[in-house]
Length: 276
Image (cartoon, rainbow, N blue to C red; front, side):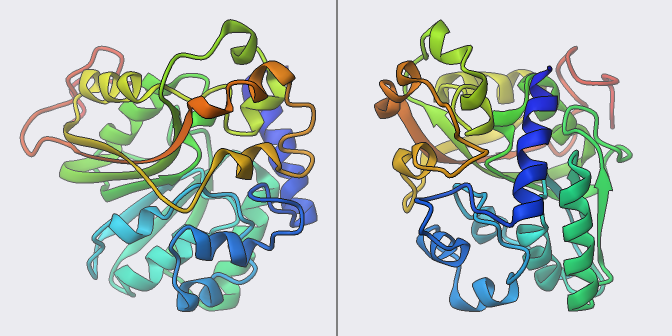
């Protein structure tokens, strides 16, 4: 079974059950969202779409303006995408991309229930986005890049779909040092947002290599590794003792970067170099 298959199966079960993968099993998704900095209004607006799957709040730093186009990588049940839709307004557009059909069903139901016609959800993987070049003013993602088995391609795709001068705003899990090979091979830890995490230096290097500029990576408050390690099944079931022993290496980060205003995709890894 591939990493994509493992992740898809786990998150499909979460979508069907509505269980949160963040925080102890007694923790409601609304409580998790508050800890991550979402306002009471945002928590209320996202009722039904918030499954507690994030590790930060990328919408708080996305600097969204009416009329902008936003792409949400790994949009899940639609929580962040729906909040973005409210900010960009009826003249804007939000496109959520997710590979799990069960999540897409929930997201589309939530958008219809809220009457947000400016948001749509498409099935696809973040390494091969179902979007044309240079469509987005902003690309966001919340605790999803770490799940990708090919992060250079995923970040190159984020660059490709951004307009020149467009903004990348990501909340993610990273590490302060390389993990052991044993921890990296922990299949359950991939779905728990652990085994696939980059070091902060690796994250920056990939962003630079694919062509981003203005890169900042900083720790985000309100989220700790206990939130991941205590996750209920199926997300963190069976995470190995070897991985748990490295818990102090993990940190929740906010990643910001910009596509250059004039340059084309700089990396030969980018799908279709020369994507302007």
